[in-house]
Image (cartoon, rainbow, N blue to C red; front, side):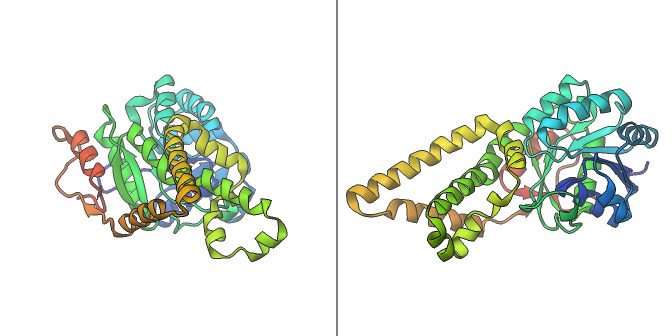
Length: 313
């Protein structure tokens, strides 16, 4: 395969993220197929999806496909065991919301040499094939692992796929990824659930008066509870740390409101945080070549400073 050719793609799990990836890959000209226990919806829409995991993995092994693990974290170990048995030499990535636990499972199954972690930062509160959208990743950040031991060839395959799906690539190591998403993805799930509980406790009057701020603040609480747990609980250590920070901030705000009748510190700090989010700009990484000396560390540092990859030479 030459650098410009698209490696076949095998997606294991065609829910919202995996199914959207399959749709986007096919739209970008990839030979792509998938596995899902429930295949009817995808097949009805004309996509090559089957419930025959052995057949799917045998095809991946025969074609040297890039395998994408797109199942919730509780199912990852089983899927990796099958990959290790039937397609152990294939390049491997994933789209799971945590990276360190997946990487550890990959190592346990002897698949680390061809593995590159991945996580597209996109989604909705809906789930399943019916919610899939080939445009879901357009302009989204797609975290791609640059952990020690990552090899250039599978890394390039993963980056090429992410770019073809319309995303921009953020290089990151697993532990730093998990600490970051605890703050900007997993904590928002927890706070949305708590806000929804508070609103519901106000009864029909409160819910009848609820408007934009309540709707936006509780949007992800509409996600299926089992899926929220599968997203957040595997990242418990990092989530506990940031949850403790947040409880400290809320406790200080409560005390300030009770003792001084003001929320000034919280409101000003929160406004500043939002302003920083609004004004943060990505910049393009252009001078680091996969395989060069110290390329992984150089990409890690660039990602920490907001650098992204938008194209490959």
